[in-house]
Image (cartoon, rainbow over all chains, first blue to last red; front, side, top):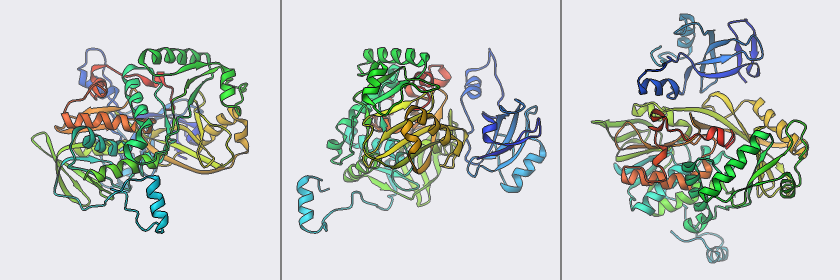
Length: 109
Length: 415
């Protein structure tokens, strides 16, 4: 069972308190976009075997969305951070690098 | 290959079972094959089998990183049904179900197909309407199903509690010709038939890279050396994402863990399969007497082949309401498999951005029931280079064209 920390209210709770929201840092495309952009945004996913950046919502708590860096193979949590950002903060990247040297996820590494 | 028969059993009994052959060969990989299939699970082996049987292509290797049938083929709840809403799905799943009926004879291997019937319980008004609609759609598609009332449900499943506190049973979608089969035997039977046609099944041979030249696949790198091929079939379920990455493209797929569990063996108490999609639980009784129980998926990307414990709790809690006897059952084992889920909950059978590279993936929680149909369609695709009528609608391009086969609403979550 995952133990997550919500960066919005600071509460640490187990998985049933939260709800997974899929891949993080998706760039949204609206009306008038190219078909491939729309397809990438709506359907194409990284689905990595390893480091994954993803969205979670603190449903049985403060109700806010946040981001988590997690390994999909070991279920290790590298850290959680605010969703109000376009890329993971440096300390999260460092925390991942400490355990997964040479990791990369989309354009981040 | 010596055929299995009653005579063979008698012959071997008379000589202390010293004459049984190995069911399939374990050869060293050759330098080059016409077709390489990655993944020796049900779909991969079925694809190889129909390549040989329907299209006469037998210079085929099936590569498997672990052991044959050790992925989702060995981890599912063995349910076979075809009561889908959309026409393309109903055609594909019904093809598979009908192939299961004669599979034991076709493969000369007893897959123990048991057409015992499947009920999908309707426990909300929404589900009643949904299943009636499916029954009408199935009538037009030539799939035999019927919507039945609670009395008939009780008659078919005496251990059921119709008056559950949260979700009373209001009826069900009944497919009498659906059922279960022995999942390992399906993989073993196909493997034996493929090996007999001269195909090489190479276990413990993990693909580590996909080689290509001028936008066309030329071979694969494996833990047992490089192997060349003219055509490549990717049939690796939960690991489709990492394999696609090696080939240089992305997929509209996410991999999640799906769990199942079995109880201690008990006397026969339920001779049909019951699925309760509203509360996420389904149950059947195996020939050994164990209650085989499946639940929902974990809600996040996962490659661990195990699942979170609270999902088992949810599943069992739901089943206790519908089947009060479950509360006194001891559970024996629990396990998880990695299922590859697409945006519209329908599979992908089609071409990929890499030339001569084909994919069969995205079966999500419903891969076992389609093994023969998926293999049939994928073999046709690989042999001809273009999808046949069964696979035509299931190409990856449907996502960019907005042509979804939307079963996520039609069939509930549990498959």
